[in-house]
Image 1: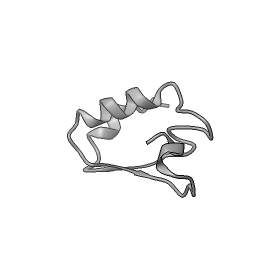
Image 2: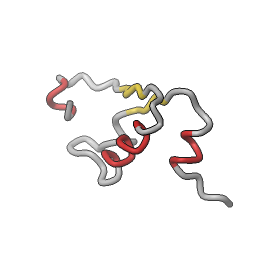
Image 3: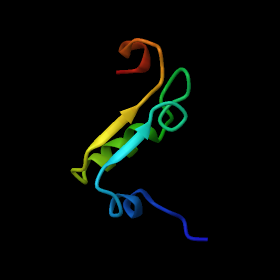
Length: 63
């Protein structure tokens, strides 16, 4: 089985829709890899849309 990297994915898509909770952070803080992954993904100059169904205010979601 081949390990898929962020670079593999970036070359395959025109934009990225990323669910905030469960992928980038748990209920209280970002996962250790999340901030670096978003920074690296942004280097591809493709739109990144963060999705959330949280009912909390932006500040409580880390925005």
